Amino acid sequence: MADKFLLRNIGVTDSHRIAVYLARGGYQSWSKVVKGIKPAEVVDLVKRSGLRGRGGAGFPAGMKWSFVPKDSYPRYLVCNADEGEPGTCKDRVLMEQDPHAVLEGVAIACYAIEAHVGFIYVRGEFSLSAERLEAAIAEAKAQGYLGDDVLGSGFALDIVVHRGAGAYICGEETALLSSLEGERGNPRLKPPFPATEGLYRKPTVINNVETLANLPLIIERGPEWYTSMGTEKSPGVKLFALSGQVKRPGIYELPLGTPLRTLIEECGGGTLDDRPVKAVIPGGSSSPMLPAGQLDVTLDYEAIAAAGSMLGSGAVIVITEGTCMVSVARRLVEFYAHEDCGQCVPGREGIAWMAKILERIEAGHGREEDLDLLLDICDGLGGRSLCPLGDAAVGPVRSSIKHFRDDYLAHIHTGTCVAPTSVTIA
Amino acid sequence: MPFSEAAQKELQQVVTRYPDKRSAMLPALEIAQREQGYLTPEAYEWVAEALDTSPTWVASVASFYTMLRKEPVGRYLVQVCTNLSCSLLGAQPLLLYLQEKLGIEVGETTPDGLFTLVTVECLGSCATAPVMQINDRYYERLTRERIDEILTALRAEAGS
Image (cartoon, rainbow over all chains, first blue to last red):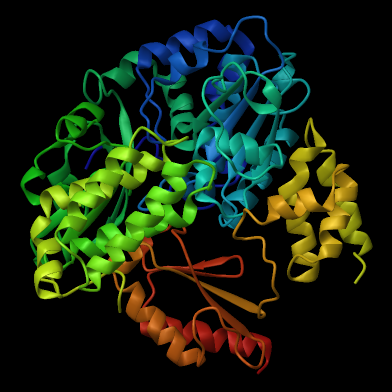
């Protein structure tokens, strides 16, 4: 298996304590940056590394930083730690077991965009993550890595951990800002984009935990080292959360461009009971499912997009033969219906109706024209909702109808499924 | 029930942590909930006063978030994830097993007030599925045997 970079400290005894982090070379990048590199040079280094956002969208991180307007202060950095897209559970590992690496990344990003306050928005359920981050902040302050005068450089930096309270939509960046401002977690229309008008209407950059955790490595080893891994357009390493019906689910670090089959068979040890793969969701629950014939696709942004899906957060969910795909689509759509904020009509009505139709089909009361009806709703929802949650709900519906129509037709014509296992019914 | 001095102090602290005190909304509600077990009209007033806003506004915000409870729950809030990764590994049969062991349906509390059973959406622990959260703690890679052990341990802790 490949070398570990992002996971270098995971599994080390007391990896969450600053003494261990320092002994393993931690905070050297931050020290180097704050004492002697100009913010613009940090932005340039990260641009040259080609690092892309690891939260799902894959947008180049350095470019996102450069959208902050000149001469507009104060600015804020927000670390998006509201990890909640079904299948995704990589950031939690970093926050619980390597919180200082997250803080070091936040610090470097704050410095690069000239922000003096960074917020880490941690999903409410992640108590241990929040506790570990808070403890790490206290340790870092005590040793001068955070505070009014970081390491005698004159740069002031404070990091605040903010806990959510149970709302998936707050992972969407504008909803996150609403929530951080003490409001309902309602997404906002863009533009204005957060880079120009974000938290408290000030320029704000929002980066995912894993994106930020890459920064100390890129500073330490250089952008050329980063681009020597992965593919030309998707450089570097990525965390993959492998879940579902495999022998060894877990968090695996691989260079981008690794074949999906390698992740499932070598890292995951293959499927449970060696059953054939039926479908793979390659990038979290919103990414369209891929059928078994596409296991040789490589795990990078371009290849997964060419295969008709998206790399998203790198959360790979494996589904084996014997599982009813109507139930899978229904379960995911019910999730999106539950998490919809209710502001826009396509999101509020469209997703709820898709959930009802899918429930009816799974119960054996569907009609063949329901499939066209579902696709019609998808057309009215995709790209037409206030925020990307609408598109997210479309992914599983369209892809399951496209690749697993027979599962739907069996329910519709015989009232029961060809596959014995439903994920919605015990 | 009035709020304790410790809670008052914590609230004052949390309000100063942000450039704008409205940002203290969720932490303030969390303090109130920890104090009283769930959010009452008094809690909305208490938070509203500290944040210079109205209780109605506070209640509206609170209603958006699933972890902010509007009803009392048992001493142990058993939250079972039924999303895809967990259900692919048997979350639904395990949920039935929990219902049978606790003698309650989803959404109910045991007569002794110890356990409330609910289902929740993805807990972000998919690679260690099936998973449930009881109060603040995650319980991962669940099996029937593990559930038996967990319930026995919690009953012992509660002294019943």
